[in-house]
Amino acid sequence: MRASQSRAPFHALRSGAISLVVVLLAAGAHIVGGGELPTAPVLLALVALTALAATLATRFKLNVVTMAGLLGAGQLALHEAFTSLSPITTNVQGTNHHLGAEALNPGLDIAATHTHELGTAFGTMMLVGHILATVASAMVLAKGEDALWQLAAWLRPLLALPALVFRPDAGASPVAAGAPDVFTPPPLAEP
Image (cartoon, rainbow, N blue to C red; front, side, top):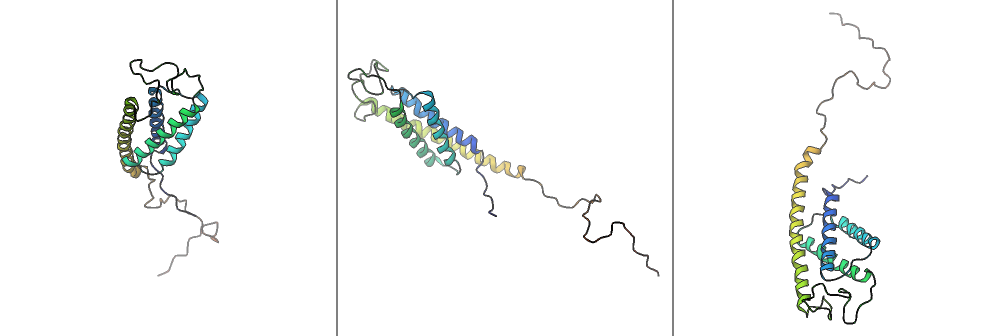
């Protein structure tokens, strides 16, 4: 029989927090960029896939670099999924797939270009915003990850089952095989 490996502490809490941050960052950035989220069933399926990926990733202890990579990859994948799975709308001539018929901010004339192109000021600002949000979230989640691992190390001795140091003598000792049912004391030795 295989020896069981120690499980990652607070696995459900950690994977839930990471998947929530990934989905919220991607959905928030997509909406700020003027995009539209997919319908509720499609969005729930994407959330479930994100939670699955986060559950697989949280089997291990994550540091800041891996957390930033996980958040960045999740944002990129969800952004592309939101773009391709969002409801189909008719675009007015000269608009893009994110802004639909009217601009998010009428002061910015970005309706004629794709908002994610790095040649535009808005596209560059959005990319910098994505990067800053990802790094900040990764730092916060990595610090929380360290705290949860330390809490688990502190709680582990308290959760261990105590081992018996002695066997209590309550008259319930097991009967030896072949022993008589009735106790007969041995004869007294004569001096």
